Length: 590
Image (cartoon, rainbow, N blue to C red; front, side, top):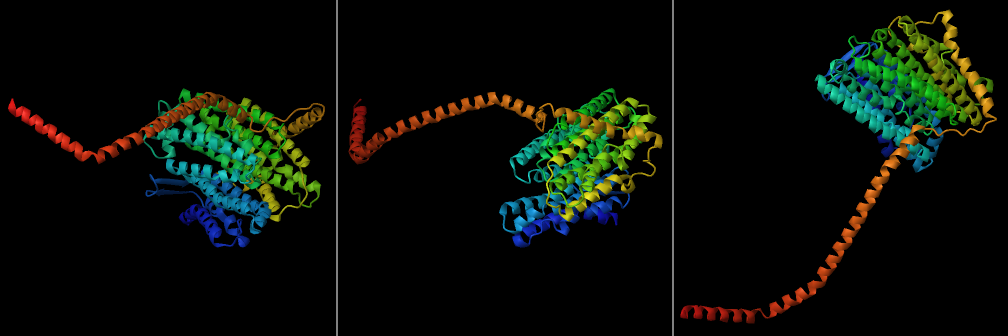
């Protein structure tokens, strides 16, 4: 049964993509349903697989030998990933309803956009599922690369200038990340003579240059996880991408980098070298810098989805700091990792609901405002740790840190949660300012409400190991909940002060524009050299042309000489014969 579910989980998205191609060429445009029930079901087998229990498969015929497994880590990861993909697909059916009507009416541009999205959506999902269950290097890298490059269509969908910029930034950073990942895997696998992720982890632990291998993999996977400095694609891509695409990008795909870190870095291992511990310190500082820096920069943004993108960077910074503890303080990792998984799962569903909520505020349903706006804010309130699964997730990571006496990190994470509350507050405020009436499609708000319920109840449905998470004691509630009111107060006071100060919103993408400026400056001498080479080429071509013209001028004379020789050849041959005869006679007389 498990093997059948595994086959369906990987083959069903391929079948869905095949049906999209068949429909494109065999179904009249007026009857094409790009978000059909079949298309919606692409992630359902993977969701069932996550709840089928633990299993392991070895497939010798697969590339270099496939090692796939569902274990205590990959099962909950697959569960929240497949659930989010399913909910986002339901939301997409309503989100693209107007565009589908345009396509059925004969709009060829809409037809191309929807066909591209419908085709590459299940392929992106397939890559996401494969990398979660993979335990061998080839399968993991194949899944990661397929997810990365197929997702380009999710970002560039609308084709606007902003969408092309976001897709360009995404693709450039993706190529950089893939190169770093491939370099890290080849180095570590060659050093340890292994083909599995477990072997890479063990090789990094014992290799002389293991810290450098780990650094390549941390940075390469960190492009997807939004490591500070490599995060710039997120605030450029999200505002331009459709809301369901943003939901899976920020909820599920961004977690692929986090899962990769957990799978290949020697977290919690005894005998970690000083250089690996130092890398852990670097990761810890980078994570905290992202947590605070993204919050500070994000609150000044005006686009709600840009604000939520910076919120994702901030939250992933917290998760980066928690993963770093597996290198800095290995003893805490066995207690910490279930909380990290719960944190990641709750963030995935809450952030997915927040992004889907941006489409709700753009087409407000005809409900009482007193109901809509609290619902829009609810996932963010949970994300700040004030209610529901957010509170349980925060306690699940704080409790091990308390037990191992890392109180300073707890304080820093609590202050970072203030930034989360502030970002959510600003995002909801911007949604209020930019709200539009019109009535949402039932598929839109139905999927959105489903995502909210799933986010608030994450510990109830996530298949974590038994007794790995628990409700915080009542005495700890205030310590977990205080960042929410603190963040709201900061935003309220700051908003009031900004009424009297004209502050221009900084551009989304922050360091992207610095990178672009530096790259342009570096390219200036290259352009000058290219222009010089162009001038040399032009001069060479001109000289060659002049030489050719001069040569062509001599050709008529040469042809005239050839004509004269052809007509006087017999006489010349007779003269030559007489001369030879005379020479022979003269030679004989001597």
